[in-house]
Image 1 (tube, rainbow, N blue to C red):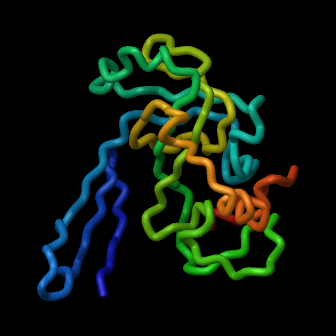
Image 2: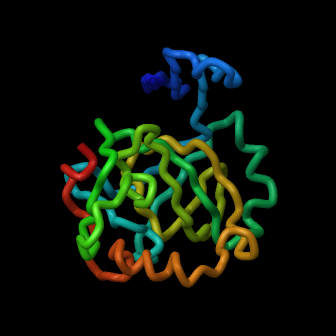
Length: 192
């Protein structure tokens, strides 16, 4: 069994794999190191909670401060209205293999990988946010669901033709997960 430990090191996030893959498989790297490219600044904290899906609350706003080595990578990003932000759930303390999303109909015990729960073995989050503007290396965004101080790992443009395939089955499961309701998580214990 592989064990993965997460060490938060400023400015890097280090993933260490302590046991090699089984025999006959390609060996896994011993370390995977991510350097945050920026940080979220928002009004959300573990005490206030955050929306379950920021895109469902378009009025929520925040900024993403991009660190100096990555400023040139912002060239032409302002041509896009929506962007995908990958981030590290830095407040998550543990993961759970089976979860029941708060607004689900509870007819299933959902496996973690079929949910958007932040409690993941590798706590990486993904949000699609609206890019309002970029000024001096700061992205002004809306439709946010990240806590203040959340490390940003990567930013990509949202491309509807490849990022939003049509699926009736996924839409039906989305209903069961409770993603069409008005309730949002405001309980910081959800992250602990």
